[in-house]
Image (tube, rainbow, N blue to C red; front, side, top):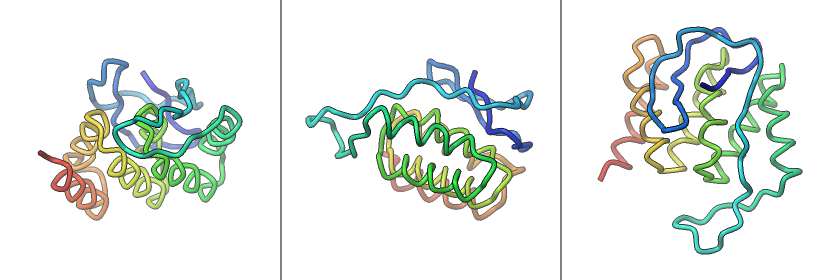
Length: 147
């Protein structure tokens, strides 16, 4: 089970390592991000930026920042990277206390277009405690990515 960003008190969807999505039952006080492998495969299905291990370390630190603008930039960077392996990191943004960080998380998941990202978008769209504009962006992403 994944942890959430320090200081976040909103429940967020989480997934186990098999990709099954479910609600969070308790908040954790620190960030425990899984290992993300750098994207190095030129034959990948979608073009992705290549992050070296130092870049990933900076993003991991930024995601745990107390400054919401720093978390926002990190989530946006992960979305631009389109790394499916970073979806668990982006998932943390869905429970952030800041609206803009949560929105960036939804937009990042929209860019990834993986089954795991779509499952999280469904969860956000169905979350009646989430703000309507964020739910609407998740719904729009699902319409674009549903086969």
